[in-house]
Amino acid sequence: TWTTGSVIEEQVEAIRAQVGDKRAICGLSGGVDSAVAAALVQKAIGSQLTCVYVDHGLMRKGETEQVEKDFVAATGANLKVVDASERFLTALAGVSDPETKRKIIGREFIRVFEQAQLEILQEDGPEVAFLVQGTLYPDVVESGGGTGTANIKSHHNVGGLPDDIEFELVEPLRKLFKDEVRMVGAELGLPDEIVQRQPFPGPGLGIRIVGEVTKDRLDLLREADAIAREELTAAGLDREIWQCPVVLLADVRSVGVQGDGRTYGHPIVLRPVSSEDAMTADWTRMPYDVLAKISTRITNEVADVNRVVLDVTSKPPGTIEWE
Ligand code: XMP
Image 1 (cartoon, rainbow, N blue to C red):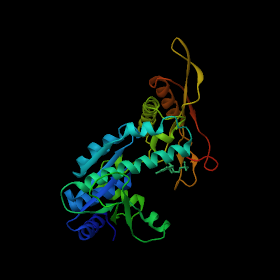
Image 2 (spheres, rainbow, N blue to C red):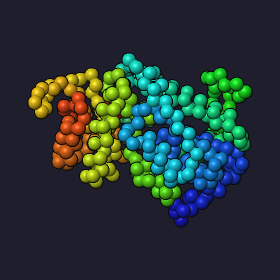
Image 3 (cartoon, rainbow, N blue to C red):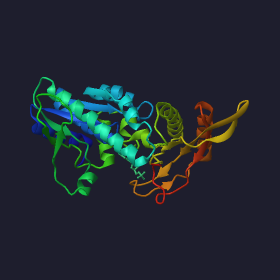
Image 4 (spheres, rainbow, N blue to C red):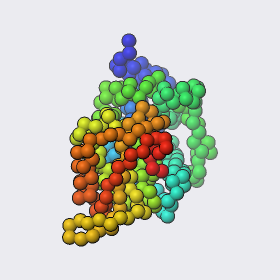
């Protein structure tokens, strides 16, 4: 019979057999799958694993710290954090088009990650031959099966390394569904904040600012998003709501009145959705009192925001994210 204990035991053995005395690298995204895959591999091979986390500066409040502190505390993993927020902000300067933003973020991410991999390859120690990925069973089915290898092509002038390094993939979650991955993660001691995390897009808050992405706008949105998440959790709605993007309409202003005078600030959009798989979704009929609390807090606590609006569009026709 299936138990998290038996899955962990079986995978730990399989990973040890596969990796032997070589080394492995794992990219952490802050998401559930990569965190659980890394924790499993860490349990199996310990210091032969190095995790890499690219901080693109587009994460929500506290998320980078969760990886830096909580993940490391729970697993004891070697973690290399690359603070690349300046680099991403520079690359995103002046860009408002959603697809262009996604391309830039994806491209910069790969460059920074590859650079980190190259640095690890140059460290003393056994050969780095493996790349850990948090592929789940549904991903395996969707892509038609086969396990594979990954190439890393150097775009950098790093002396003494081959142009093209091939990694063998370690995919310890290939037989598992999302809920099973969460159980395994909990059993491995990962905190709820990581294991029960709702879906969050790779490009992060970069695609939740409608308009140009700047440091100030990111800080503003991080505050608004943190308030919404805090109140949704306090109301016990985390399981009921699939995810709730909080979006800043950075190019829109409207007139308001706050304190002694008129304001001309930005709207924040709440986009709570209910869904099974994110392919379709409906807007969540959330309790009015929770909406009221979020609205009051955001307009009181976040400077430059004077209006909170609710997105009542299903998917289709709307996507879950605004960009
Ligand atoms: P949409 O907006 O297409 O989103 O209805 C569907 C689901 O996918 C997430 N999403 C992304 N996840 N990289 C990701 O890893 C992305 O670029 C990306 N875009 C959207 C979104 O949050 C939702 O769960």
